[in-house]
Length: 113
Image (cartoon, rainbow, N blue to C red; front, side, top):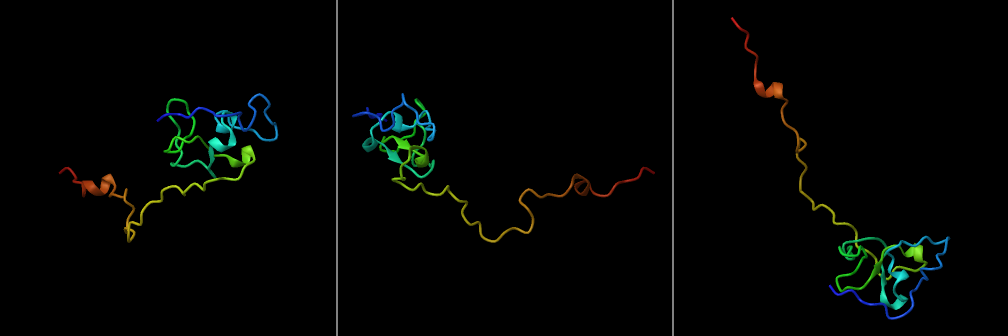
């Protein structure tokens, strides 16, 4: 993945942090102008961390912010809900991890004669 270079001044000046809006140190708003990054409503699989630099990018290599409230913007994209477990049908009568106790598996005790 080729990481884009900023094409103008950053949306938020990294040298003048606003104490009312604590921005993440890896926020693309500190590097890119507003037209060069996308804002998601929250973290999701659609914008994972890039392993080399820890920033988030979309699959199309667009920088992504996942905290719109911190930078004072509305989310451009609504992150999908986390993957839910598929319906497994009818629930089993016993929990999956259930098994007989070790005493029940041994059977009756024999007494020495």
